[in-house]
Length: 549
Image (cartoon, rainbow, N blue to C red):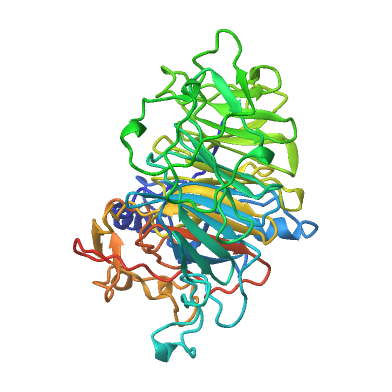
């Protein structure tokens, strides 16, 4: 089966003026013997001339033309999702490395890197506060608010008694959640994260150790660590783990030598770590598989098997994808074929226990049935120029929908699996997408994104004056679909707003709202029937010169 392709792909904002010129040429080519009578598929139109799937579709979406979605009136939530009817919010966040949501949709955990500190942020999604002055950092509402005289626009962050430092933690309450951020003590930059909902544990691990953090009450953190080697899988019974009250100031781990791994240089790291607990049991891998070292894995709850993917950089060129039976010496039950690179991520949905999705460094997302080794569908996400960094499979009203995130493409893309088509893409403020999570209880999509135009020290680079047409402003006079003339499109410096140069994959006319985040942000796309088109993220604060903000 041929891969499902998205006909439209941004070529970078520097190419847009040339595309506009060719678009005008094709519009006047009725009598020309040298030009085709219709523009080629994939030519990117202005947002004002692109289709709308619904009047309430967010302005931070670009809808694909000619796609008939599979959702109907009998599946209202699926139709809302596939029509991009959502409010969009954003909050600044450390550079993200991974995310996971609990099975009951009550808690979201995200790992991030801030300066030299590895940060775990735990978001209690059912502990936010709603109200006329409720905030979710960057929500934009009516500017004529009571806060305007105090230097705060409606919906901007407001301090309250919960926004306090608590002994190494940072607690925060917003309109949609309460959150706690703490230093994990990790020194490496690559993590995996998972959630144990019954025990209220966020489980975080790098190559050298793993820790568990308790989210039951602000101020409590329970964790233990170990150092694994290859060829064995260590298993811990969380019921018997010792706990500690604080994530900082604990003694260095004196792990058992059977689990030592000195290849990462952690021996010279002065970051305090917790006292390690011996594993409850150790699973030796099957004979001949002693070098097996999965780089990413995820429990497939319906079968009880672990989905595991190898990374060619650490397995001598192998990049296999397997289902492992941990009850029988981690035996490889199935090898899933078709990957042309390393598997970066897995996703499965309670809506279908047999199906899971993978995202791969070859730029493709794939859907597999656990009963068959070959993919049932392959989606061309990267189009030969990008990794598929993250995937998220959901089943609103039983309708399969796949969200994919990309680094270079700087977007979140929605795919209607039954229609075998890309439906739309969501803007991320010119940010790379590293993790996606779905809050089923509130029908909200979270995207952890990185601004690649902001360096390690907080300086912005590569920006130019923004050229934002009137209809793409935060609050245009009306949401017009009128044509934009050259003077509006090619306008000069738009006040103090700036746009990334050649590194951005979209120009200011690609979405209905020209939004640049200018920082690492956690984006929330809240899907609902009656959306507010003015609920959009606040424009970022990137500067033209190399400057800290």
